[in-house]
Image (cartoon, rainbow, N blue to C red):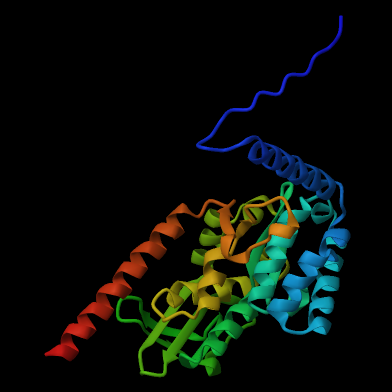
Length: 304
């Protein structure tokens, strides 16, 4: 019996046969490209003209772009779990880091590419977040610090008044973390979290911490704790685009919305939150609403 292949064309609008042909050809071409790229290594994808072009554009320096590419490949090759992650998810995380001009080398503490199953997760670091704040030009002062046993004198969470005294330090045991900023207009925000509150937050919002996986929470707990407390008050600060992106994409798998590196469009990237942070997202929404209400009240006061 002779095998027969039937191709049915469904007419759309006033399309003609040449439209069908080119559409079919384009789809086949895209499928072939995606298949080829699925078989390419991270190194091959990173050095593809499309990715190199994007990195040159965001770093504005071929030398910096090359150095960044080497760092990404080195980080991935140095982690057995990342080596098995989907290359496009690593590229997505790397591209987000590059747009903020943050380095992915873990020891620098600016940002991290973390394995999560078969995908890679972007995570902003404590020093990276501080750097973005300083770049924004909105802050007169910003600081965080671990608080050791004996240094905490008194505090009122509601009035945000805390007294710390380094001279009363009794030991190197860390009992909590503080963060504070002052804007150029004089607005100040401060927070203190004891060690139990930090650990409870990490347990609730980070699967890596809960499971004891190798992550920044394990390798650099102090930095992650300071970042967490700092993020809790940055909800009330004006944010540059870079700062907003850092908060938005933090602890997420980056969905590039394409399987073809030729079509990479950073503006189309979307975060997929892989840890349980629904409560934190709700807190962010509430904080933004409060911030908008404050701004509205300030405008009305000026108009009086």
